Image (cartoon, rainbow, N blue to C red; front, side, top):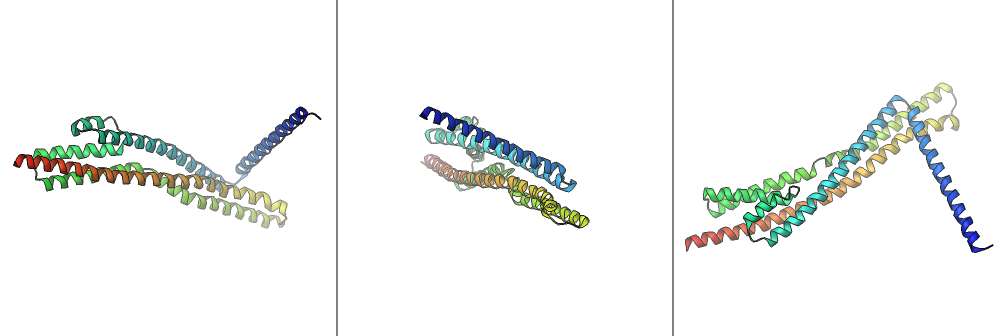
Length: 253
């Protein structure tokens, strides 16, 4: 037999195997959907609750991914401009172009507070304390903004497995109740009810696992950004202190 014929036969066998796998997969999915539709009202309500939690958690995941990616990207650009710029007023006007950047927001708040303490003609120590308080408030508000909606992912990861387990226990209770009414306990009578009940546990795990993974992922990225904010505040305060001391020494001379 020629190599070309062997290759053709192998390709046909592979296509048949793939088609059989697809048919088997679609059959399993249809059976799972049929089991959900045939389940009792309690299991259906639990499945609806898990579906709603899954939809919300995925919506939060996509939103946080977009929000953090945009904030980190703009913060990196602003930091490059910050270290290259030699004029704080020009940088303040440029910072308004980075609306999603948490570091740019901290800079705007700190610069505005610096202008207020200059107008009040406070001494250097009091002025820097006011600026540092303003920077800490801004960093705290930005941390709250970045962490917003993440607690739902944590709650979803913790609660949905137990909600699914409750649906499983409820379904198994119903199966054993039917066994008691029928008076028979063979595998043909027990297996369908138990398999229907186990779908709730599988749904709970399918909802919880992505929520936990993405919660830990976003939490780690936000902690890195909090460290970046603290580093920026320290550098910004050092620059302002040097500027104020230079102005004070110039006025005294």
